[in-house]
Length: 156
Image 1 (tube, rainbow, N blue to C red):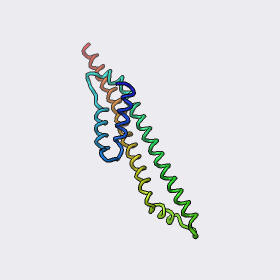
Image 2 (tube, rainbow, N blue to C red):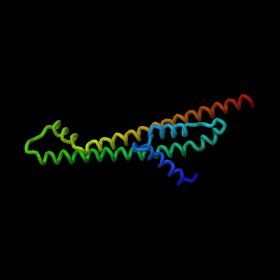
Image 3 (cartoon, one colour):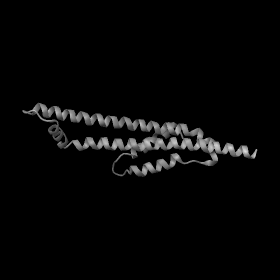
Image 4 (tube, rainbow, N blue to C red):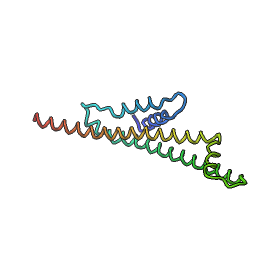
């Protein structure tokens, strides 16, 4: 498979982790998780050789998710700041922080920004879990390889 095909496949998986109609992020996560942590004990050398690349792919997706999360936080903060500023400028009396919070949170657009942050954070955490699974796979590959070498020494 070419790098372009791998990138396309990874981005499709990334997009399927999004909460949209027709997508089941948990199903996609389970499918990806089972696929990336699978070990063929008869091909340990090949598994070890390809593991760094797979780890890099998913770490890259995790970095992309972190960027999306940071942007969602930024958009949310910008929305809150605009709403607070507009409210302060249009008010004849000084408002408390609690009153400003109420005004911001009662805005009909507020849930949209919060949902963006929540879903971006969910995607980031899911990918972080996959990357952690790959780190555990590396440890298991090292241990299995060590066991194979020990067995080989016993019979030679």
